Length: 456
Ligand code: FAD
Ligand code: UQ1
Image (cartoon, rainbow, N blue to C red; front, side, top):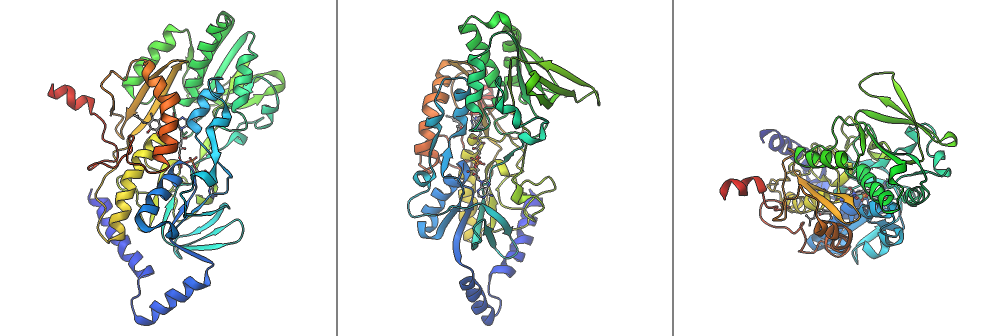
């Protein structure tokens, strides 16, 4: 606790020196430098994905729409969690996207260009169309980058049949094609050796594929194989135990510490290295391959003073304020907060960050703490989900009065039908309902199963 506070105090002083007039003449200088730059906003949001849009809505309420801008190059905004179901043919990809223009809060300025440079010492950013924009407060919500190209043979291999990936709009329908065209052989599913978003998604598509092949009578002709770089099936023991039961009962083969390094699509071969036996590789033929690509921080952060050594935005994990630049904040996949990267985490973070920014704007120390809440609806068939919810310590932090470690039909309905609605109408509009409503000391107030069971 002492660490972040001390750090905040020190950097608050540095920031005050940068942005506040110390002598009367400097005040005029400050104003004129503002006029020189093309645009200035009280709050500038980088990225118009889940985190960027929800924070734009919240900031609009706080400081007025005319004082907020969001920088986002993409014409369309996608609800990515739906892609798991799209890859399995349960939803159409078209319903996962809406025009960015329709999700940017009304009155907030949408700057339709990529951020190319961030200069936190001058409180400015430069965009792809050459504009310089200055800010008083910056919220970084740039998401993460997919690196298909780090696997030899990709992305070209996507031109061939039998290979797909739910992680990108361009390849998600290829998963569904591969599944429908499956005749016999290996169905392979990979998990890379990097942090990923929605760490459950690489195996959700395996369970759905298994269910599809059973439904269509082809399961006896398939070997279903999950090759993961991780040393575990899932990071939280309670849910991992249930998943191990499922893979055993459904005859799914799991190989830990196997990393996909090459795809030879012309021969339908996938090459994996065994991470615990350096230099050893194993080649699998496949009838169907689902690729989860390596992922990393956004290019624009790499080498920037805002980034940590690995390139992720370096924020305090409790209050989501930058560790060295107190007028900079982060949310979502681009940050180095040590929790699983999900939209559910973004939802919980948004309430904490809202409060942090309110206090920083009033020169008060942030108080509300993010506990690492994240959630992963582990889709285990076309009508069941295990709803994993947990914190920084990998402790379950569950919402519903059922055993969430069991497969549930209601939770499938929540994931497939209710959640998209709550996303478009609740989270993105910062509406006061849903799991992300601002209540008390935490962004998300789940029913703490472990505590409750002690009490009763
Ligand atoms: P994003 O929503 O990815 O937004 C980042 C934005 O930044 C994008 O709009 C991008 O265009 C923009 N951007 C990038 N570079 C620049 C630049 N240079 N300048 C300006 N803008 C830029 N989460 C769940 O909670 N539950 C699930 O079930 C779930 N399932 C998933 C399944 C799949 C297949 C996938 C792919 C993701 C899933 N997620 C799930 C994860 C969830 O979608 C992300 O964690 C969430 O979208 C993160 O929000 P974000 O704002 O950090 O990033
Ligand atoms: C959630 O909040 C969320 O973010 C918007 C998701 O992403 C789409 C989820 O998948 C889940 C499960 C949650 C958590 C929601 C509840 C109702 C526990």
